[in-house]
Amino acid sequence: MKTLKQLGLIFALSFAALSGNAQKNEYAIIPEPLQLKAQSGQFEFSGTTAGIYFESGGDAASEQAFFILTERLQQAAGISLKRVSSAQNAAIVCRLNTKLAKTEAYKLDVTKSKITIEARDAAGFFYAAQTLRQLLPVEIENQTVQTNVKWKVPCCQINDSPQYAYRGMHLDVSRHFSTKEEVMFYIDQLAFLKINTFHWHLTDDQGWRIEIKKYPKLTTVGAWRYRTLDGAFVSAPNRKWNLEKHGGFYTQDEVKEVVAYAQKRHINVLPEIEMPGHAVAALAAYPQFSCSGGPFEVEGLWGVFNDVYCTREETFTFLQNILDEVVPLFPYNYIHIGGDECPKMRWGRCAACQKRMADEGIKDTHALQSYFISRMGKYLEAKGKQIIGWDEILEGGLAEGATVMSWRGTEGGIAAAKMGHNVIMTPNAYMYLDQYQSEAKESEPHAIGGYLPIEKVYDYNPLPSELTAEESKYILGVQGNVWTEYMINKDIREFRIFPRIDAVAENGWLPQSKKNYPDFKRRLEQKVKRYDIIGIPYSKTFLK
Ligand code: ACM
Ligand code: ZN
Image (cartoon, rainbow, N blue to C red; front, side):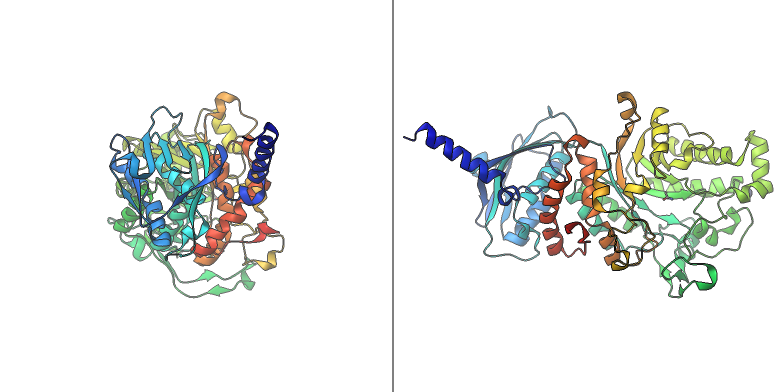
């Protein structure tokens, strides 16, 4: 029998082992779970089969929630995670627990003999599986069977749920086009990080990217440009142009495929159809919906352009017809209708717009933009959708029921929350991943400017201190934005996105009081080993 002193020593030693970095690094989960209790010992997956058991049957969605883990175990470990009909033979036991506090919540209990998962919905099971994936050795990310790896999971008790219901990442596919395959790969990485919304910026001055059957020229004309600014944005005589044709678009069938792909990974797809500004690509195809009548070319330069949609009646019909085709493609409750950076100069000089203002008793062009957004919002509401717009939609009066995406800072979000409107925080100083992530700018591909190290992304608190507890409820969550003017190919896009996306994910998942940059950095050093295996060219600046 051991003496009390011996027991004390054993306890002290095992505690020391648990708190050491080597041991801690077995628990390198991003986003960090809300509660994680490390325990000694390990569960090991072994043999060619391992069972997964669903108590009380398990619905199809819960069962499907394990498909990525199943695929990883099969491909990298050669282990088949088969559904079994009793808990006795199961490596993983799943239990529906509707008493968990939040949707998407889960509990994960790893002992030496069994892994038990509780969740109140399929998303919770899906997230438990993403956590389990990160508790397995990094070699689990391989596409071929790795011999000489023990597929061990460190014992622990996890009780996890997200701070925010909206955890988003955006991708601009207008400035530079991303193929359907690239979009799906991106969605895979979002799912890994428990990000649940993909904001797909489908239209802008430089390209229209979604097939609209009623208006084929949107993609035969609007999806292609014949020159693109090459390199730095300098004054006109010094500009260099790339004269290669650039463009592309998604057919409606491809859009459906992407949406289904995202849904399977518990990700909502938020489509953005920009109006009334950032419309030059659409106007190049259909100039009759501008104030001047055109003609226009799909833009190859970046910036804000004066030619926007005219407020004549025909434009509303055009946009409504477009939305009639967009709405059925996206099951998510929200549609993003842009609203940012719309110059009012043409409206001020256009007879049709002046008549619109007189007829409707609209006092100025800011109120005319508000009329535009409110009208489209009502149209979409009648189709069962709510609108999201950039924070300019506050100017001239915020449309009823609109959600504000606060990008020029946090002020728009604060004002909207105080008015009782939902808000998503994407302030450009913290959440615009198009900026340099190193002070040595020349070491990176040319970027739009700025300097946004990952630590600054990480330290951002989505909850403005200006809000009362009641007003804080309107902050739905946080999002990172990926504007691609200077992200000319997939490698550069990924270099900018990764690993700052990991910080965005943790901002959405963990309460501010639990965030800890040194610990995040420790976990990130482990996570990027997975990026190495997956083949993602992330920025290594954070290691310095
Ligand atoms: C924006 O960055 N113009 C929303
Ligand atoms: Zn007009």
